[in-house]
Amino acid sequence: MKNIFFVLLVALMFTTCKQKEEENVRMKFKLIQSKYQDIKEVFKPFEDSLSTFSKEEYDLLKPLILEQNIPTLQKNIKEGKLTYEKLTLFYLYRIVLFESNSELSLNSIIVLNPNVLEEAREKDLNKSEASEFSIYGMPILLKDNINTNNMPTTAGAIALAENRKTEDAFIVQKLKENGALILGKVNLSEWAYFFCSDCPLGYSAVGGQTLNPYGRKVFETGGSSAGSGVAIAANFAVAAVGTETAGSITSPSSKNSVVGLKPTVGVLSRTGIVPISSTLDTPGPMTKSVIDNAILYNAMLGDDINDEASIKIEQFEDEFEKELVSTTLKGKKLGVLKPHLENEIYKASVAKIKEAGAEIIEIDPPTISFDGFLTLLNIDMKHDLPQYLKNNADKNIKIASVKDVVTFNLKDSVLRAPYGQQLLDGIIKDSTTLAELEIVKNNLNTEGKKYLKEIISQNLDAILSINNFDSGIAAVAKYPTITVPMGYESREPISLTFIGKPYSERNLLKLAYAFEQLTKVRKMPKNYQ
Image (cartoon, rainbow, N blue to C red):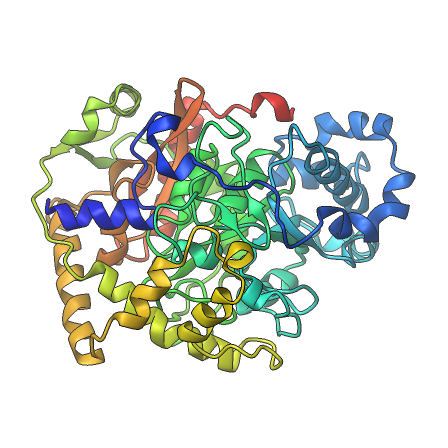
């Protein structure tokens, strides 16, 4: 594969090759805590409520909540062991407990919904509306590039710090319609990591440096949905929503031992989400279990007339959950990429899958060209960000273009861009025309499909990968992915990623569930139990 492919993946976050800390430039932190905001101010609205929520009560609730999936939580609430208000208080208490501790803080939270406890009490009054497989009453965190009507949406950038008066993103509207509680917003790699070159994953000027609970300051968080992965790994909420262009869900999910689904572009709406690329962007669910992933994914579905890529996908019927939990790997036809068999955990996982009755097809992936990938992102963001700023941002926001962001940051680069803004500079310099961009897109799509051709030619259920190693390829091919914990290498999480045909999310969830139940390897991070 041409060197340009690897250069781009390293520069943009799409590689997760294991490196020693001293060898990894992205682990050379210039700062940890945000110089822009004080996390204590984020917690202030809950001081009174948490003052009457004791450590003893928190400890009593732990076995009912920690690591429990949505059906179990709903069952506990239905049986009167728990309420939606207590569930929400538990998470708020836990967030404050850890994020206020200088030795354990993960810098995963940017803002909390000041109304969430009142909303939880309303859910308790109408809890008969909840089913076992419902998102109803479940506290959910959102990546802070997703609009909400009562919290700022910053993309981690000080340039958007006052982006407060916005309408809910389409997927947030759907979550609320289905009864979800929006607990707050989580940190991310600033501008979804299309900002600075070789800067730490999970850093933003607004939120500071997100840290990995499995190895604080030792392991990378993955990016750009770093806060989504970290917060769910640490049990700060039931689930979170991330966004991906090419690896931004699969990377932090795999690095934090959680389940992450990157759907086919258009399955979930992008309206009201700060963009990089209208060609490749999509939101997706990040959860501790596959069943929770299916429930959260289902709650965000809907046809959005304001998103040109949006298509109507029917929500799962009531029987899908039974179908999901009864799925096995027997008779499934799965492709295995030969270069990845050098990894012992991947190799052992493939052997287990084969023992479970799946047919394994070994694949020698062809050499492909990734020429133009950076151009695609450059030109899409050059055109897509102004559209968001015009149509979906607070009207008081003064910036209107990528160039405006660069100019704004230069006024105080120590605070606003301590690692530089090389990728934004590159956008401004890129003079590729829209006609030329279409050629680039088509070429990349062809190359991606060539690399993954056995999905179609051999009618595979999925191709198996590691972490986000092939996420860039799946992205340009327009194929969905789901990543599931498959083990730990010297305590660092590693995941198995399923790449499927377009619009095969239902099948991917079933495959992921079957693998999850076969292996059951996820462990809570040691210091966050």
